[in-house]
Image (cartoon, rainbow, N blue to C red):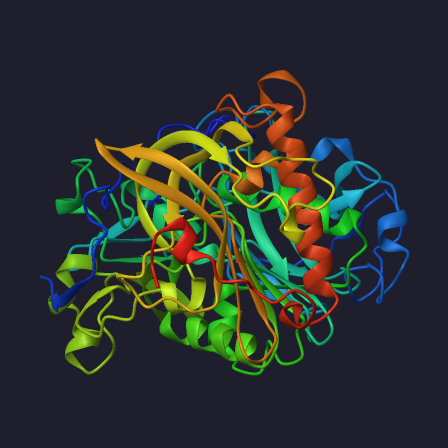
Length: 525
């Protein structure tokens, strides 16, 4: 599930209410029911090289000046300019299409690479002005699956030649001033060997996307009864999702990782699912703040990377909770996210032999995510202090924390814990054990670390607010809007830096083997 309130960077509004609440945490082994055009380079400097521009690639990228005009603070009139890309990600130099609908006579498209540029969060890489605008047809809804379909024509072809690898936001501005919107895009790395992999979560963005009146959570009645069973990338994102989730749950981590100068590779969970070789040679894989929807193929490929020595950092909570299937649309492969949830028996794909698109931990084919993560999703909603229990752990080096140090509001709104009622890798070490009360039930959120025979280390924060807390500066937490203060921000930044540096150095278990402490923390042998 997702945070109930995400005002954050984009003024995010109320999101879908939780489907899985604090009462539903135990294992359930039973089955449950246009014209093309060329753009111009940005004025902020050269378009860079074919890599991320970080240490080990082209060292010039982070030395370029950033641009302050990337951020949308007022989206303007609803429907003023809306768009989607016909590719979720592209390799450098490959073209993609933009499908745009606007009543304005013309609009401007600006491609901003998100990262770290001396404190700025974005750099203008490409811009195309005075693109003719037109309104496209109203969407229709497939009644069988309540899927929103657009059928929009391509407005503009965009060539990414010269664009550095990275996470991008395409900003669209109606030239009559009526509105602005974003389209997220990943320019993915051709190789991850020797790099820390930033794995964006567009499947989760799309699951929550309510553009056209439907998501995998809600329909016109605002209830599960009318939700979509399948959602497609062939539609724009609503204001809160897509770029909204990226900016809260991914952009702060990308900025920190680039600031540290780590060799990075960029991809998406969809790409990892599609290509079993994509993570070969990676030193670490990062799952960011809200990464709920995974296919079995993505999970298998990440586990294979771990078992080959790649470290894994879970920098959020509720990761790998929903089991999905990707299917094509007329625009290309893997552009449909299928997730029937408790209606899995109605899924024609499952009837043909595909795994049930329901929660990983439930049947049929139950495969709890804890075997990969070490922790498991335990509930929603909570708002609780983060409590340090193992201050001598290497992840806390340089923080100055003592046992019992408490950081208000850092645990929320969803949380994970170690629970040996589910498959749990050993040895596993709980380094923060934070009491929570979720809908009257007492439990704990755990930050945990385990190691495997390959030498890989797996670090899981246990709280969904981790990545957004990287932006907590000063009283009130800066852009984190939950009352999180700068002390929590300082802690999270230092711990994240420690983990990223250790993981970038190679299999962390060789230098930092986990010391199992469940007997002390939970009384579990």
